[in-house]
Length: 191
Image (cartoon, rainbow, N blue to C red; front, side):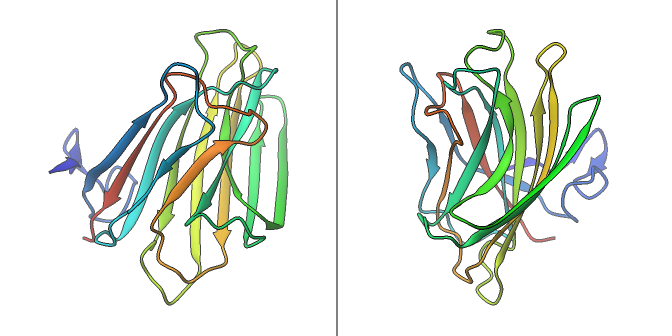
């Protein structure tokens, strides 16, 4: 059953998501008490045009913020690259990485941040089942720490032509995602 076919009379295209496609829920994972080292989606069907992950999270880092990173198909090799832009409200910082074992997604709150502060973001995995090209990813997210918030925009590359069948998301420093961190995976249908 499509979750978002329209929003306030706007089609998914008009809302600025994907041209003409409906979103269908595939799976949702919520971290329980004690935390978890990662959230992972496996056995992803190849029946959609694109994938989207919507996520909220905090990590156990001894600090106010952390970055979530991801891997596809359990590939831990140096097959990823990313570019990013981070805005803090007073400055903008650009960064990049190549020959990485992950791509970056977005910033989230750390364990010493105010308890009510979390990070939120969206990860789009484009043409994930297309085996004729490498996989590209775009992400947007951030967190507001009452004066030390950040907004992040990243693009990522997985240098593989394999269809994406699994996604693993975890904290860059962490080491854990804290209880109540939640990720929902959606398939985006072709228009």
